[in-house]
Length: 167
Image (cartoon, rainbow, N blue to C red; front, side, top):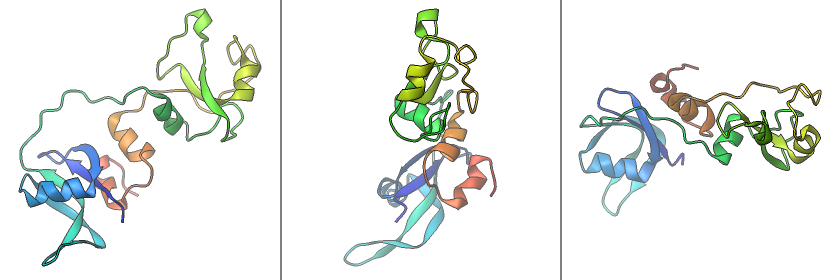
């Protein structure tokens, strides 16, 4: 079972991803409607069987001001695909400040990358160019929808029409 459900606002814009059990309760309590269900997955009670929701839409519009992605160690790792951005290895990972903190570098999406301990030590207190190291990709701040779509692990293919990309 997928165990995840995409939650849409009343205007069909993606809000978040929640547990399928929570989504089912919202539908059951008529606070949301099921837009899509998962194929061949069901919740069972003693007397009934219910389809597991894949996408639900809230019945009332929820006013959501700008929703950003929280800067955290795990979110940086997700954005960088759990790989060192200097050599590509996937173990012994840490965070590296592209512009070192000692040179007034800040802890922002645009200045933090995933690096292995070896590369982080090799780079030291220098810029990547000064250490003759090249970044695989320039660090960036992902949008909320991009983060849901690309960095939330395995997601249902049916969600793509609501997340802005069709595959």
